[in-house]
Length: 219
Image 1 (cartoon, rainbow, N blue to C red):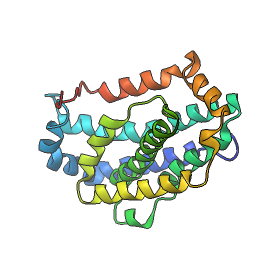
Image 2 (image 1 turned 180 degrees about the horizontal axis):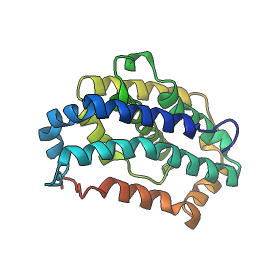
Image 3 (image 1 turned 90 degrees about the vertical axis):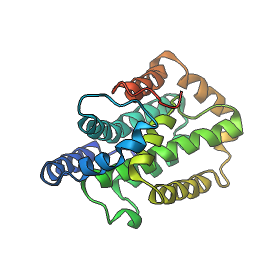
Image 4 (image 1 turned 180 degrees about the vertical axis):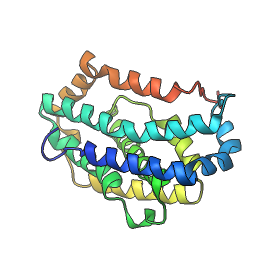
């Protein structure tokens, strides 16, 4: 990644390993998931065999996926000379995870990392919606809606709504007085995102969203 948007994957890996050790001792995430199973079952079709374990793994994968997606986005931007557009987005997303806001200090372990990853993924989702509104295309060719709804439900309201409001404020700041997203060169960047070398982003997220056999229960 570029020096400005580099994601410290080693630091994240260390955080996850520490959180996994804590989860083995205290089962905080498993207990939370067990408490939310009825709510989650209204959104997705859960596997019959040990849904709590599967959802715990889903949360870990959700957290681990973030650096890979940001790396891919940075690579595509570097290839097209559009890091001025993507660097602020990538930086804001990684800050949520590596330097979380004070509102998340009450949580620990995998629950804390889940909250932080949710902020980052919701940021990317909101940036996509803002780009669609401004230029008719998303910045990232991914549909994060179902996974984010799942994590929102696990976090629970009203706290998840507070996190959403935090994200919306950050997105407003990202787009404030920025014309890069309306520049004609941005079209070239968006076309490259559609090319074969980055098309796997959307395919990978689709597979990630359905890897538990958790088809939407809303359809």
